[in-house]
Length: 142
Image (tube, rainbow, N blue to C red; front, side):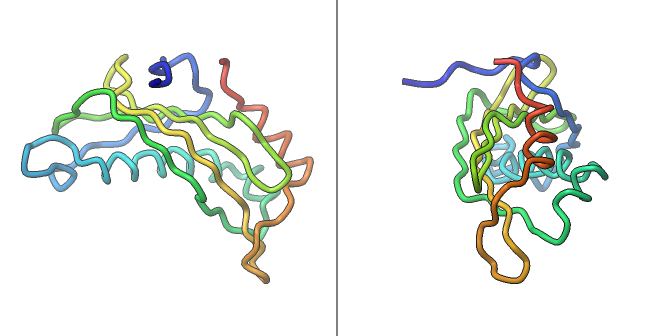
């Protein structure tokens, strides 16, 4: 069973991306790998906030699971909006839901599980309360 198609109100954080000719495939629509990079830009918008960067410190972010549902084709040229919200924060991982929007239409949605990697060990590190609180303050409405 397919999950419901998200709507704009489901998301708290937003970024805009300009589609490029190089994002198209031989069928003239935006390639699915380009859509994955737009979702990455949306997640990085959340983590570029100065208060989040301060809490993360020297840790790095890693995607350990990425599921993308494609709802309709997307064509060049235009701008798209990427909505992102953190749905859950566990002990060592957190889950994003994201939507890629052409106007009011969600053309693709993503579920993403991320971890923070300790810079000295390369292993997933526990998520402290300051980061947990910050991530959940932008939680989705759903």
